[in-house]
Amino acid sequence: MSKIILCTSKTAETPFTFLNTKVEIYTYEELCFYIYNNTVLISKSSLSEKLFEWIRDELGMDELADKLLGMMNKTTYAQDFLIEILSAGEYYTVEEIKNYAEAWHKYRKLDHLQKAKLKADGYLAYRRYIKAATFYDDIIDETDENTDPVFLGNIYHNRGVAAANNMDMDDAKEYFLKAFELNENPDSIKSYFYIVAITSDTSTLRTEIRDQGFPDEYLDEIMAEIGESKDDVREMTIFAMLQRAAYNKMNKDMTDYDKRMDIILSELKDDFREQAI
Image (cartoon, rainbow, N blue to C red):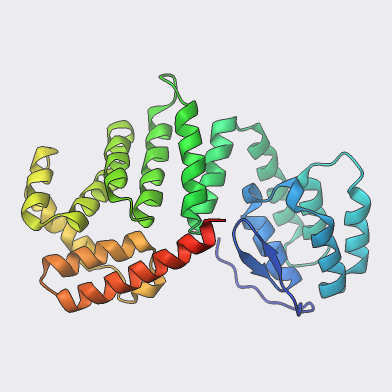
């Protein structure tokens, strides 16, 4: 998804904000990049007159704004608006826009649960953990014995990530363990052990590793991976910070542990204020 955004168009004095992700857009190029990489999070209702007038007033793209406003009373998909925006400039090539349209077509053929997962994953990527958790819970409620176990296991895993980032550690452990039972993905059981490491001592973690059928050496592997986490905790998710803090705690580095926990609690409060709307 990474792409260098070279902005050659006008920069808005007042940004347009996509309310569901809190992303602010200042240029046409940024708008194109957001659209191209976040289609599942853009509903037709968000493609409103407010956005189109912003394109006119802030970006000075009168012709594009007129086209979009003219489409509002017609029977169109959200895709039609988005492709019109992408095609108005030169940020993406004709081939890239064609690939985008094909991806949209494939998305529309997915079943309801697959679409819901993609949307939940999008919110998770933007650290909208409460919103993501709501989608994952709805998916879990709609599944039954015929649901693909790997698909359902991945849902539980991501639900665990959302829970961990909201400091719901008991729930996170249950979700990760359930995920591993279904998808047998090593990342799910590792995440389970990470939560045990955060909430318990080394002895408890070692016992839990044995109870889950893993050798004692697995403890060293887990702690080594946590220890290799980035030093700049402010660039990490809350869950990643918790993993690093657990490593500090088990290595008796309480100064760094306290520092990281202070940052975690501060960021958690900020995230919760933004998400509890």
